[in-house]
Image 1 (cartoon, rainbow, N blue to C red):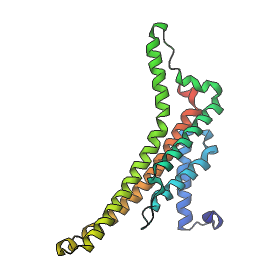
Image 2 (image 1 turned 180 degrees about the vertical axis):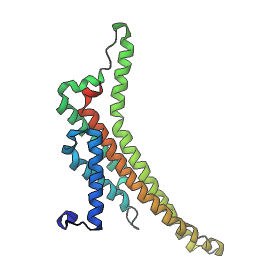
Image 3 (image 1 turned 30 degrees about the horizontal axis):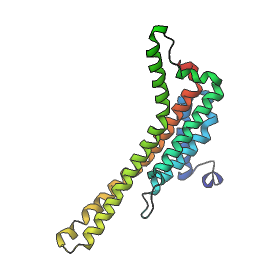
Length: 211
């Protein structure tokens, strides 16, 4: 809202960055979903910026990334799961459930047909778990590294041993590297979450084309 309210015909640096990100996300949606992608732009843009900011907040000393909490990551993943299934039902009606039946096989191959159906059901229900777990693990590991570095600095600084005091430099040198990796990971994980959400919605609304 702040960027949009101060937009100019010749964009400044901040406006240019936001426009680039908007175009990139919308372009990905167009590629993955196709002509119907425009109706999902607000969802993908909202998800991306929410996750990006949530991922990067933990880089500020004294703050903690909300996405390092599994309650948030799995909550978002479940919302995406419910939404893409809703989109599939809205676009395809009850025919959406045909994907769980599996291919038509002769009657004597009923066990194989049941096994394929079970595989389809498991694969669709595993999506929110893998989506939430991937984001949580990557952001939590970044938070853990930063916490360990902070503990090492405090431990070395308060030590009475001069050799250990000298080691205080090591975590201080490593911190900028971890911060840089944290920025890269935060951006990539936000993008991965959004791209996977796009692919799930695309698969749901174009179900008949993939059968």
